[in-house]
Every structure is written in C-alpha cells, then in structure tokens.
Amino acid sequence: MTQKLSLSQAQDIIASAITERKAQQFPPMGFAVLDDAGDLIAYAREDGASMFRFDIARAKAWGAVGMGVSSRTLGERAKDNPNFFVSLSATSNGRFLPQTGAVLVKGKDGQILGAIGASGGTGDQDEAVCIVGVTAVGLSSS
Image 1 (cartoon, rainbow, N blue to C red):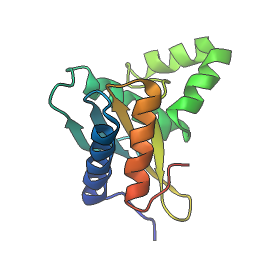
Image 2 (cartoon, rainbow, N blue to C red):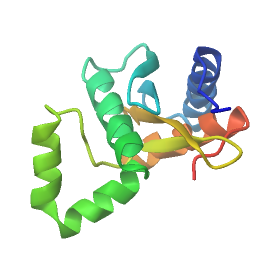
Image 3 (cartoon, rainbow, N blue to C red):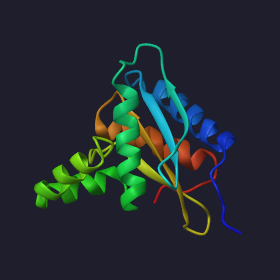
Image 4 (cartoon, helix red, strand yellow):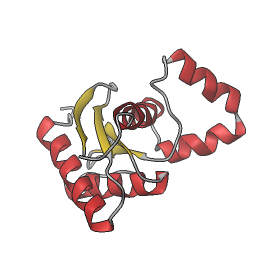
C-alpha cells in the first residue's frame, strides 16, 4: 500500500517548524506542505510574514518534490546550468524556485510523500526549520 502524507501530518510538520523558528528567533515565515504530486496540503503564514511568503515557500517545495531533491540541491545544480533552470521556472509559470529552503518529506521506506518549503528567513534558516518539522513527526527529509 502506498503511503500518503495526511493533512494532520502536514499541519504537525508546520507546527513543529514554527516552534523551531520561534526557538531560534528567526524572522516570521510562511510554510507550504505539498503532496507527492505537488498539490498543496497545508499552508501557514505567521503574523508579520510578508504576502510573498506563500508563493516563495510553495515554489521551493514544488521544485523539490518535482525534481526529487531538496531545493538546496536544485540551487547548486542551477549554478552549473542556469539556462535550464530559468526555463523550468518559465515553463512552470513561476511555480519552480531552485533556492534553499525546502526539503522532501519521505516515509520510513524512503518513498517521497511530498515536500515542505519555508520563506521568511535566510535560505539556511528556512531549510533548518523545515528539517525539524519533518523529523518531529517521525518522517525523513533526506
């Protein structure tokens, strides 16, 4: 049976990421959790986070789940082949953003269940809270 990422899990991932964001005193963020088809399961924008946070968080997560790697990896790959990655962004109507701040959500068997993206801090801060959110619910981000 194929495992699916549930709404409850997605909300718990976001809640744990927010708790970590607050503990680290990073700026307010937006979080988007997508399923393995790139569809939105859950989203939250903290008080004080700008209106751009949804689009950025979702685009980071969408690229990660679509390509099967973290957005950090996509950003590194984009440095060597910028034209391809600009084309991907254009082809996807801006839904693809190869910037650090999104990680995959994987089941215990390594199956990709979806991705979470965050926006509001630095890319490293966004990624760090996403990882904490995923591992807090017993799933893997790598």
